[in-house]
Image (cartoon, rainbow, N blue to C red; front, side, top):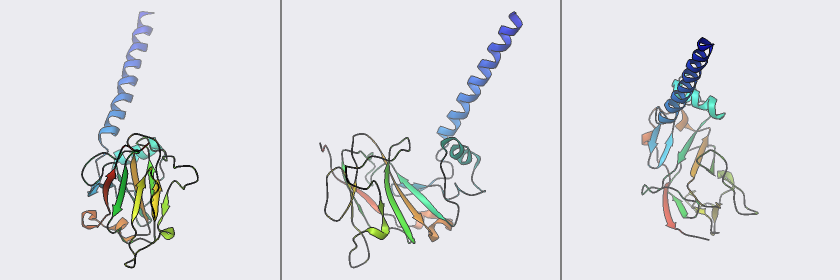
Length: 194
């Protein structure tokens, strides 16, 4: 009987420690393979056979469908260009160019990966083909809880979140050096909105 209790205890410790160490390794290795362009981060090989084992394990754990090389690339920002965390109760302006792409989308997500709720009657994301553009073909985008003229991405609630800028059919997805890309700056324009 003592043998069975000892065996069960040893298995419980081994499985518990093994599971904890695997989760710890995945959570601590998020920067492996990630490249930064200003506040934006992307892992260009995440959807390829050349992806590092940690990226593959994170994708399997999270159940994300990642774009393959040549299909596109997803950039994620959790901070503005000044380094402050993005907060749903604050307003931001995206300014500057986006890399060339056939189509791109911009959407807000919670840090756990769920789409942030938009204000009632507003879409929860923007698509580049539906934006109002300037004469130079650029687009000004306001992000936040308060309605803004022009292109506005509605965000509601409070707390930290991430912006996801996904470029489809873009040369950036097959580029080996993302650091040379020009990405839009994320500029805070105000906080503490009700």
